[in-house]
Length: 128
Length: 248
Image: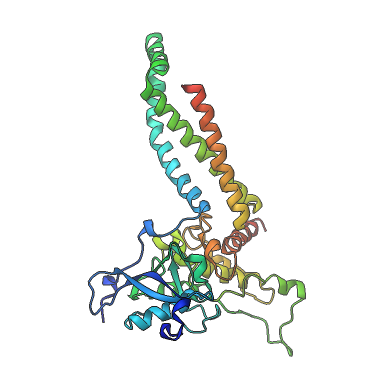
């Protein structure tokens, strides 16, 4: 008899299919984590902007010229928007039971992803 | 069904990539590709194809019993999605002449496609999946209105195949603490039963951070259930019951 701990477990995530509702849920977590860790950065940049008139115009100049600055801002905005929308989806499901069937869940998930894409497009046009 | 009995012109070959592990021989599991002949004049189920594969490779092991989606023995991961081999038509899952079979995720593999379901049944046991009554037995059976009985539709049909719980990420990470969709569906089946008299105790048992609240609405359970049941909705019903009883 083999020891219990030696038995293999089939849990290679790359081989297990994840439906769209699951993808939305995982992205909700990832975006939440990303937004959480970007928070100190935002506070730091904000504190610099408040230091003096010079530092404010320096930052404002960076936003105008630096691609890296724009790209980071874009990613934070997209992550935050997605997390917010997926959060609303979860609250709506919890409160009203909407999105608890496979079909409505899929529709809501695509709605969250679609709206995030639209918002991303808007940020893209606005920033670049 | 023997491949030799089918006329040659009605045979095509498919590749079955199957997860193999024999604890007495193998240190690690591996994937084995078996090329098998299947009839072209009719569709067969994945379980039938497994029988054909076993003729070629007799050491291949899997569970099966009723072969019609009633016993829940042959739950497995078919092309990445859990399902019952006996009610999954081969034509629906065959991709470029290939099909991949793995054991249900998250549970220890006993051998090949057979998993140890102990964790699954331990969780089911916790929800006391039977009618609990405190009042004296009536002279006749405990009666229910047709409307009350309808509340149990979509709940009592569960065959405990384990497809839902083993597709649930929350169950993968906490199989000992999170009850999993199958057990929670059964929990709601008895909470919703008007004849049951232990609703409060049942709800008390679920009120911790893990048992119920680890469900994040990923809904893999609903997407794989071979009986078309909805554990997510059942879990949501329990949650609402837990929240509303606080106000009483």
